[in-house]
Structures are given as structure tokens and as C-alpha cells.
Image: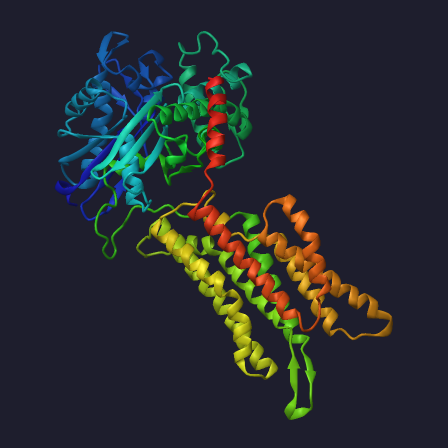
Length: 639
């Protein structure tokens, strides 16, 4: 391999150390240590003066706990008092960095000249010099120090996140401890405006709380005397950390206790242990934004990285206290080290491996329902439209009397269903094997364009099938299928451009923007189906009253569907539904069926236009500012 051209980035954390090798063409790979993707930062000082690192250090701790140091970063610039004398903390860190350097040299096939070390933004010159000495003692060349939040922001740019010059971002790094930084992107790069840290607001505090819950029956209960002296503390801590990571994939895990029976730990216990830590992280974020003298409404994004980033309690606390929806980056534990290595920063060629771009999440079950309901409604209406045609004339001069409004609504529902699947299509595009990855905005924009094209194609297909089935010219079918959806198509094209250019990121994500209200679809589809039934059913004398009543109910439901699409406030819906429903019911007739379909198509276009304006182009700021004002006081008061 090209060892002389490789870049080695190392993130030496309080709990674990991760590293990445990158090359000028954009290819990169994380370093692995045995079966682990990260090397434990813990060390063990053997009796002969040697330093054991990584997982073997944890194994040795059970036999001689007084020689074990689980987090050397907490004692930097000091000398550790161990049996047989004192040891310089630089030597402990150098041992870990030396193992990383040896593994990197084995992978790269030689020595590496370009080394970057990730450091907290709050470290001053003395600590940074101390870390350089440790790297020199480990045999590494003079390293370049990269501040962790700057590395994370660099990683976001490389992944396609749009951060325009002048924008403000908040980076919450929650690992063994917590560091929250506010950055501004300037013409020459990112500038750290404020940074706050707390070593007790991270995974280590959660571990202590879990140990207290297992031994004492409640979080943060004191550990019995003598536990540390016999090595039980470190065995238990290793078990708790393994259980904490396993709970990310399993609802409950069993934790073996050294001096007692095994205990089952579930997500509720973990959430209780993590909640105070998450609240402290949120408080740090609020204080950092205030220290940077930045209004929360001006923050372009709040990004969470580190080993605890995936815990729901952290995201919930940040959203509540800061008033900005947090975004957890893909592979949050590697975000800083990948940014420091400039992983993926190169011109993309064929067959070049690139850093993974954040993929828009596949919508949940309710989003699938929101896609399926208008889809089935569209098929039902077009089927009724074709099968209930009223034929007039004789043989050669036969012609069909059709409900053009029903065809228009079928086309509208087809487009609504397709656009609802826009983020699903975007996720599918991101998962294409062997294809160069797109940015997150490019994925969403392409997904919206693809879904819009699919909806238009289905509407056109309805027109062609209807023309062939009925045996009339296709012109009328195309007009009623395509013209009612034209305004929505224009709005969808605007959304696709905004998403691709990443000019705006809607609150709640694009999935929420594309989700049309299901209640409106159900009411309008049922209403039009009842109207068509009343217009085409055989009017037997004993059924005339019921058939007419079905038509009036259909008009009422269609009017309610229009109100549900145009108005979002529940009170206004109640006020407007009655008069508009009565008017729609009163004008139900063969001549007015087309008008009713066009009215609903117009309502759908109004809904999409309002979505783009209110959620994307001009999102409301007042509620966010109010939330910040009220919750900041609560967070500070509960400190």
C-alpha cells in the first residue's frame, strides 16, 4: 500500500481510542484491534514496568486491580501512584498510541508521515503540548492537532451536509464525558465560538449509575467497601459497559454479578440511569449557545456524536431544552476521527470508496399507511370511473357519460401516494450497490423528482387506459388526469430543487413535509365514491330515497375532505366543515361532479403550497423562541 501518502487520524478518548487511515484519492478504512472497532484507552502497569493496553488490560485488572487505570485521560499532566512507585501519565498514553501506530503501519505497509490527533476544543496550550509529547514518545511523527468539533463539522461537509458560510452549528460530543461547542463557518473554515465540557456528563456517569442500580437497587447507590480492592469493581464495570452497548440492539440483557446472581437489565433501567446525564448535556448546550451570544433561532443545526449519541434520552433532552431538533450523525463514534483524517475528501472516480453519506430514514409504519391509503383510494376511484360509465346512443354513435371529477381525484391521489414515498425512494437510491454516493440533499431531491414522475406517469396511464376502455379520444382523458395535478407537480419540483441544493432543512424532516393528511383522503375518496354511486345506480322506486341520501352524504364528506386539506387548525375545521359540506351536498349532480373534483384538486394544491411555504421557505420562528425562553430557565433551575 501507499504508506508514505497515508493519513493517520487518532481520537484518544477517555474510554476508547479510534483511528482511521485515509489516502489522497478519498479511500479510507478504520483501524480494528482484534475483533473490536476501537481500542480501549485503559492501561495496566505490570510488575516489570511494562504497560498493557486495550482488552488485555481489563483482563489483567481482575488479578491486580491496584495496577489498573481505566481512564488515563482523567489524570493527564500527573504521575500515577502505583505499587512499586510512580509512573508518568505520558508513558501510559504513549503505550496506547504506540499500539495504534503499529497497527496503522501494518495496514499501510510502512511508516506514516501525516498524523492527526483529535483534541477537545477546550484544551489549552499546556494540554496540547502534553499530548504531542505522548505522541513523540510513542514513535509518531510530529502530529497535527484537530479540534474535535471542527473535525465533526468537516466530516459533515464531506458527507454532503449543507453548511453555508456564516451559519452557526452546535456540536455535542457525548462520549466518556461531554463537550458542547458552538461553531461558525467562516470563509476560511470553522471557528469555535464557545465550548463547555463536563467529564461527569457522559458514558462514565451512566456506567456508575448502572452499577449503583445493580448493587444498591437504585442509580448512583454507593459501591460496597472492598469492591475495588479485590478487582470486582473492574469486572463489574466491564460487564455493565458490554450490557449498555447490547441494549442498543436487544430489549433486555443479563449482567453477571461477581459476588451474586445475574441480573436482568432492560431499556427502562438504562433510561433512568441516562436521564440525569442527558439533562446535564442539554444544560451545557443551552449555556454554550448563550456564551456564544447566538440566538437559538439562528442555529442551523444541532449535531450529536460520541458513544452516547444514540441514546434517546440525549436527543429528547436536547430538543426540549435547546428548542432545536438534534441530528445524530451516521456512525457517531467515528465522526470526529473521520473528519480529522479528511476521510472521503477527494475527487470521486470509478470504484473509489467514499465515506458513507447520511441516509434519510425510511418512514415509520404510519408513513407507510399514509402512502397506502391514497394509493388504494386512487385505484378504487379509477376502477369505479371506468366500470360505471353511462352509455348513450346506439352502436356506431354510442358515447359514454363519465364522471370526470372522479378521474381527476384518482390522478390526484396517485400523485399524493407517489410523493409520500419520496423519502423511501431516496433511501433506496442511497442503498444502490456499486454506485457513487450522493449527498443527503441530493438523495431527497432525486427521490422527490422520481416520485413526482411516477405519480404523473400513473395519472397519464389512467388517461390512456380510460381512452382505450371507453373507446373515446384520449384528449379529454389527458386533460382531466393531468391538468388538475399540474400545480402540485410545480410545487414538488420546487421542493426537489430546495432539497437538492440544501437551501432549507424542514423541521421534522422531508418525510413529514411529504405526508398528506390521511383523514382528508379517506373523506374525499368515500365522498366521491358515494356521489358516483348516486349518479349511476339503478333507481328502483324503493331505493330512490337511499340513493339520493348517499349522494348528499358523499357531497358532505367531500366538503369535509376539502376543509381538512386546506385548514390545519382543529377549531377552524369544525367551523368551516359544516357550511362547505352542506354546499357540496347541495350541488351534487352529474353536471357538478367535475367541479367537485376540481375543487378537491385545488385544495390539495393549496395544501402542498402551504407546506412548502410554512415548513421550508418561511418556517415559523416564534414557537421555537418561546420554547427556548421557557425551557432554558427550567434547565438552569434544575441544575
